[in-house]
Image (cartoon, rainbow, N blue to C red; front, side, top):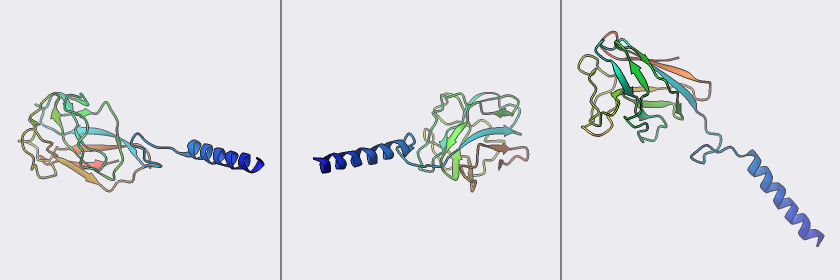
Length: 158
């Protein structure tokens, strides 16, 4: 009887240690490293005004997140900062800037500013314009600045 009790007690201790030390994220992954990102858009044409969404692949799995109906940044005279921080779990991300609710992925700024990635998408599907890679995850929150003052997008991660 003592042997059965010891076995059950050992199993309970092992199970409780496992449950108390695990730290899964929403996808069930343990010890996943991530950072929160804020976007700053500057130097866009002054005609870029209103509510915009920032859809993209923030987890490096080619799954586009953030529907275009979300208001992520309000642009005024070609300038804006995201009101939301995006959780990023990949050392590279692809993203765009589109008017809120625009299901055609129209980018009215694109004729005057060239994104730093070839625009290969078709209407109705995600069309990336910006790509950045090589930042270190887990070292704190950071900002990605998209500066288009030269007519071509230049990205900075700070």
